[in-house]
Image 1 (spheres, one colour):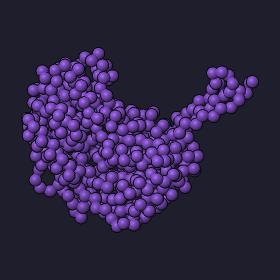
Image 2 (cartoon, one colour):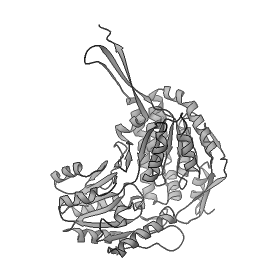
Image 3 (tube, one colour):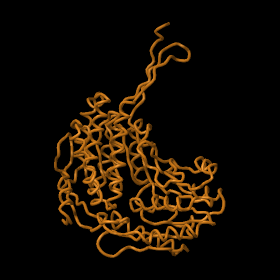
Image 4 (cartoon, helix red, strand yellow):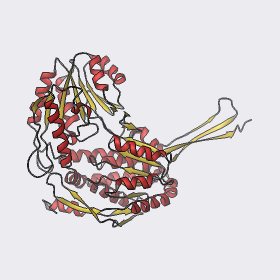
Length: 491
C-alpha cells in the first residue's frame, strides 16, 4: 500500500473501512476489497467486502428505522441535512482530496464536486418542509378530497464511481428529506467517499438504521436479494443502461418504485451563427469535466461545415495545452481514467474511427507508465456510423461530425437510443427555442457547457432512464400520493 504524503495518509486513515449497519461499523463476511489510486495503480486502502447476508441485515435495519424516521418532523429531518451540509463545508478539502485519490479527477474538479454534491444536502434540507398536499371540494360538491404525500419506504440506492460524493447526496438528500430510510451500495472502485459521507451524516445526528452502507464485490447477487424482498419499496440506480434494464426487470416482480439515471450519448451542436469563443469554452467543459467520464459528457460534436475547421483547430490547440498527471499535482487538468479497461476502450474507439476514415487532430494514445492515462484526443471528419458516435465514450475524446442544415443537425443529434442531455450553441434566439423542442433529451444546455444544478430536475428520456433527481421534482421520487374522500360536511 503506497501513499505519497502525510496529508493523504491522514485523510485515508480517517475513513472507516467497514460496513455501516444499524448505526454500527462492522467487518464484512467476505474479507476485504482493495481500493486503488488510478494514477499509480497502487492500493491505497482495504475495506470490508460485505456478503448478501450483510445486505439483508442492512435492510433489516432500514426497515426497523422506517416508521420512526417517517414520523420525525420534517423540520428535524431538514436540520440534520443542513447540519451535514455545514460539516461538509468545514471538511471540503479532505473530501476533495479523498475523491482525487480514489477516482483520479484533478483536485480543482474534486473541489467543484464537493460544492455541487453539498448543494443536494442544502436543497433538500429546504424541500423537506415543503411537502404539501390538497384539500378541496369535489366538482360535484358531494365530498371533500384530501391529497397527501407519504414516504415510499426503505430504499436501495446504487451509486456510480465517477461522482462518488454528488451521486450519493443526490439520492440520499431527497430520500432522507422525504422520510425514507436507505441501504446504499457504492461503486467498488470508489467507495471511500460514501463511507466518509455516512460518518458525517451520523455526526450530524442521523438516527441509527436510517442510512446503511454495504460495500461488496457481489453487487449482482446483493441486488437480486434485496429487490426480491417485499419490504423494499424503492430502487434508485445511476450507471449503465444494460445494468439498469436488468434492475428494472428485477424491480418489476415487486412493482417497486424506480429511478434510473442511465447512459448518455450527448450531442453538442454548434451552428454557423454561434459565438465560437463561447462554443469552444463550453465544449471544453462539456467534454473534459471529470476526464470525460460523465454521463453528461458531450459525446458527438455536431458542427456546421462553415465553422468546423476553425472549431477543430481551436479545440485541438486547447487540448495540446492540457497538463496530464496525478490529480493532486499543481495545474493538472487531465487525470487518469478510472481503470485500465477504460483506457483500452478509448484506444479501441479511436483506432476504429481512424481506420474508418476519421482524422486524428491530436492525441489518440494510451500513456505508458504507472496509472491509467489516455491522451486527450480530437478526431475530425467523424461519421454517424462510426462506433465512436454510437457508443458512450466515457473518456477524453472529442469526435467532430459536420452538418449543412438545421434539419441535418437535429437528425444527427436525435440519431441515438439515448436522450440524457444535449448542448446547443447559437446566437439565434428563435433557433434556440426550436432546439429545445426538437432535440430529444431530458436536459439541454443552451449556450452553456454544464447543466447540472441541485435546483434542476436531472434525468433523461429513451434509454437514458426514467425519473428525475434534484429540483422540486426530485423529492417526489421518494413519495407516494394518497387520496382520501370524506362526505361533504355541509350537506
